[in-house]
Length: 134
Image (cartoon, rainbow, N blue to C red):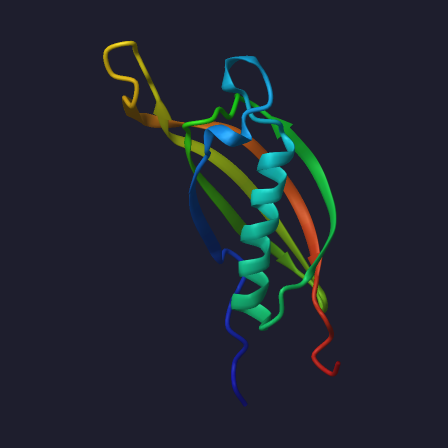
């Protein structure tokens, strides 16, 4: 009899630069939907890693926009598997700003590493995958 590997606690991480073309508001702010789209990307990879299928997002809960995301930011996006059902996968998500553009008149391409990173967005989400017999 083979043991089922423990999958709860599995983490998937992506890093992404936010281009200036994604700024929608004054101060180069990016809309909150941008973070939700990134959560979809890490959730898709989590489902591929664990189940060999992209899965389908079913719901979000407890979405929190804690700090702004701006064009020129470098983001680290994580998904952590917190609960696993027969077909459902519940994940906690976070967007951390790990770098930020800091342009000046003298150095228009200046940027800085944020230490510590800034927690910008968090959420919990549920995805579903096909049954093993499908």
